[in-house]
Length: 294
Length: 314
Image 1 (tube, rainbow over the protein chains, first blue to last red):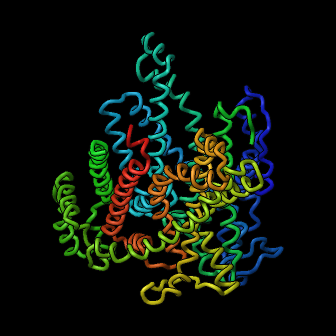
Image 2: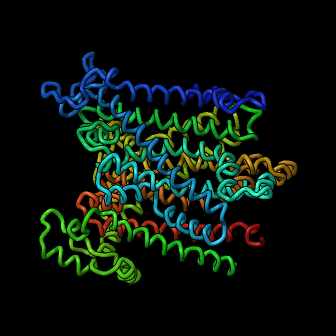
Image 3: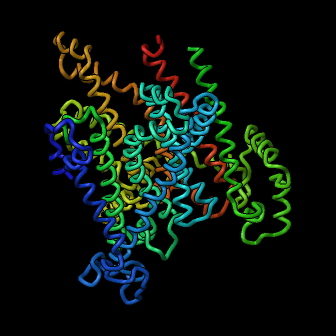
């Protein structure tokens, strides 16, 4: 990571370069993209990559240290930690993406309506958003997951709903600023209906900020899913999840530390990568940053 | 100032009303008859009937909400079905432990985040800047329960310096209390330090390029004085608001940290309540947290106006 940071040297960059090129020019973001691609490949090809069945217990191989047979060691009932980490990528990535899709599908239309309609509609939506934001993200997610019942699906719904107010507020704010532009006035002057202006003219201009926020929100959602699974409210045993693996590992930290190291490292790497890509996207999509790269 | 206060409080009241509605509606998420679910596995018909009466479940939803919110306004957050004690009593009993943990965590976060942010901004694009950014990224990307496990592995299992879990009251034994709290507080402070560092850096970069800093330098003031007295003092103002906003992170983090280090605080209360299906406690904790968050934000806004004369004048 130090190399990555040290490589983040300010260098001139073509001001009109495509955002994707500007993103890839940032080495930290490019590193993040590679790691995310790697994890996606691992999640998709899990049956091919995992050396053993992630659910198969072996009473003769309980808490075995890493070896040629078990690269990451085994857990408290002899399951292969490497295979469980590989399959665990599915739960984390799925939770990260689906939760954010839930947030986007509720937050963006609501924020658009609030920002575009204004008046009492805006006031009502803004106060509702304030109320949701007043409940700390994870505490709200825990409460929702508790009432909905523990499962990965419910955890994704809980995380998605808890993260929604951020998207409402962001979309509303961006819509308010785009609404004041001349081209919106022109679109209105030629008789476009309100919904069409919001969808065809406002939304595309709000999208860059939403893409950045969504990327960072995936990182937060992955940690939230791991947290809920750690507390027993996410993926249910015996299905593998990095959070639930850490929950078990904390009881064996003195005699089987490998049980804690690999799932934690996987969460860290994936979250770090989404954060790096999010930061890179923010710089790449910001017109003020076009002259430099980090 | 008075007009500002009135305006600010006018926003808080509807927010609180919506928060109460939101938290009340959580109970509607329970599948089937809430009384049957709340009665636990035994589903004793007498308990179910008692809960129906107590929670006014036969009344229409708005009437039930009014009953509930009237109770809340009188300090009645309901009763724990498991422990048979008022929820407010349970919260007030556990709160000091979490407040102590949060207090130490904030001190650690301030001690790491602000100096790192100042150095990072002052030595922009240097090795110090990159190192501080790496630390911030580490803080933002590390799940705190994993960091907790790693610290236990290092300081408790390997070195044997600190206890792996448990809590001792500071009134009983201050040294043992600090030994038990330092690891969880560091875990909790780590993520906040990262956020503080990033904000301090960006605020310092803005302030360091302002005219009055140039003037202070032109007057021949020592660089240390320019940075620490002139620049940092102004850069710190937005951090007041940030500190209040981080309360959410702190409480969310406390839930996990207390679980890892088995600390009997506010966070452990909500997790235990979830597993005991003690929904009144879950609702009470969320309501208490949200109200505290809103109150702290209000205080931060007022403090912001008080410390920054420019806002007061405008």
